[in-house]
Structures are given as structure tokens and as C-alpha cells.
Length: 425
Image (cartoon, rainbow, N blue to C red; front, side, top):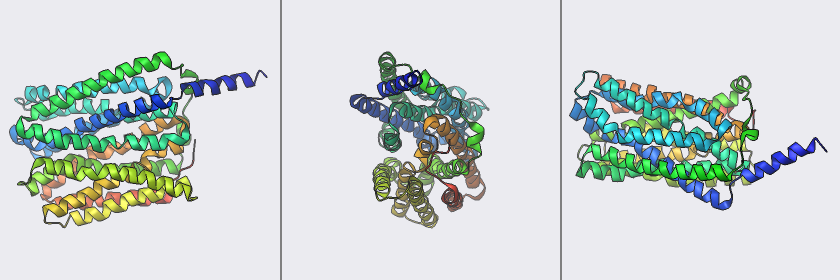
């Protein structure tokens, strides 16, 4: 009888700590808004880079340093924030993250103007951009940790994949509102507007977090654990997940950072809002399509492993084929269509590798996702900078696209060989 009491108490506490339907809806809308805004602030720099670099007389290499510096910081906080979120609660880390990246976005124009008269302006702006990336790096690990703590295992993957659709909404927000503000006001206004919206969301999150803390029981008993790092690092399915994520991120981050410059250089006569908005319209429906396809495959009797591999292969093949075509296109319409397919492929990724940490380590999803996203963010600074170096040396966009396609091919092969949907720790 004495052995059963702690188990019953643990089960009751876990049940009481789960979100109610109303809380689940409230947190979903709040987290979706946050994911939308975090991508809006992330993509405003690539949107504004052609204008800022021209005004400040930055070279392609200088622009590449500023664009890639975000990911230097993005890699630093992933593992730690995921681990801390699993220990003390994801909502607390999420709030710290929101306050950090909101404020650095709002004050970015002052940073650029303050250092623009200095010979080291590019480096100093890159450092602030890196700090912004460090705060943003805390968002997804803390969010997936929060979801793992408050939702049943069967609900986590679909809930998280739907939240990732906020990335496309955020990019659309930048492409539409950001482009409008840029054309009618100035690049400073874009930073200030998105920064203000982000600060408002951070205040809303602060209220939710305080209310959540008062109502919810302590999670220390359920999060007081030691993550078996050595066991995890010795598993091929984990590394296939990490490598596949890194290769897909290389495609996503390079295009996210350089696409506005590509259209500015190749089709300068086209309106900015068109190129910064239209290609991203495909990601949201593809995310829902990937979710529906995953559920249908599993209901048909296929394993989670087979399902994840099928959906991820659709992502990679769509991107690879479209990149090869993009390297050869000559018209604006063809380029837009190819990029729409590439970005749409990311929607399938959000339902495969992006949710794989919940499959591989259900009790440690925040920490594992943080580790996966740390390595996955490496292409953010290496790939983005290398793309800028390629352009500086060759002045050839097709070379960049073929480079991305080759990296995608490698990631697809590795995940097909070693990927898994079963728990490994």
C-alpha cells in the first residue's frame, strides 16, 4: 500500500497539471501569436538588408556577416534553455526569451544608426543581432518543453506542428505590413512597429504566466530528472534527426536570409511586397496537409517511423527538385513558383523531423529539441555566410541553389537510413 501512494499522487498531480480545453485553446493562440511575431522580427532584417546595405555601403560579405550573426546567438541558448525549461517550467523561460528579442528588435534602428559612423559598424551591429538570436533561440525549446509538460503524449506532435505554422504567418506579416511600411515610411518604422507588437505580446505572456503559476501545481516532481546524454548521443536515430534537421534548415535559413536580395538583384522592377509575401503563402496549407497526411498514414497501419520518413522525404524531394529548376529559370513567375514549392516543403518538415524529439525522448523533449536545434542552427551562420561568400566570388545565384540542393540530398539519405519514430531514451 505504501508503494502505491507516491504513484497515485504522481498520477493525480500530472492530471491536474494538464491544460483544460479552455487553457489549451488560450495557450495555443498565445503561442501561435508569439511564433508569428518571432519570425516576423527575424525576417525583417533580410527584408531590409538591401536598403540598409545600400545606405550604409555594406558589401555582400558585410551583409552576410550581419545576416548570419543572428544564428551565432541562436545556437548558444538552445540546449540550456531546453534543459532549464524541463526543470523549472517552459513558460518562465519563454517569457524571458520574449522580453529579450522584443526589446533588441525595437532598439535595432538606434544600434544601426549609432554604429554606422564607425569603421567597426558591421561587427557591432552583428553582436546586437547575435544577442537577438540568443533570446530567440530560447523560444522553441521552452515551447516544446511546456507542451510536453501540459499535454498528453498523443496530442503533442500535432499541437506543436500547428504552432510551427506561425513561422509562415510571421513571414507573411513581414512581407505584407513590413513591405508597406518600408515603401511608405522607412526601414526604421519596420523595426519599431514589429518591436512594439512583440513587446505587447510579451506583456500578455507575462499575465498568462503569472496566472498559470498561481493555478498550476508545482512541476518539480515531474521534471526532477537527469538526462542520459551519453546514451542519447550514442543513438543513430538521434543523429539522423539532427543531421536531417540541419540540412533542411540550411535550405530554409539561406533562402529566408537571401531571398529578398535575390529578387532585388535579379528582378529589380518587381514590387517588394510580392516577393516577400507570395512565396510564403504555400507554407501554411502544406503544414496542415503534412499533419493530415501523417495522421492518415498512421491510421492506415504504418508505424510512426515509416510515417516520419515518408513525410520528410516529401519535404526533401520537393525542395531538391524545385532548387534545380530555380537554378535554371529566367522569368519572375517561374522563380516565384519554385520558391513557393521550396517553402511549402518546410510545412512537411514541421510534421516529421521537427516533431521527432517528442518521439525519440518523450520525457526530455525540451532538452533534445534544444540540442537538435543547436546543431540545426549551424547552417544558419555557416550556410548563410557561405552563400554570401559564393555570391561575392562567383556572382552566381544558380551556384548557391545547387549547393543547397546537394546539402538537402545528403540530409534525406541519412534520415532514410537511420531515422526512427520510436523512443530511444
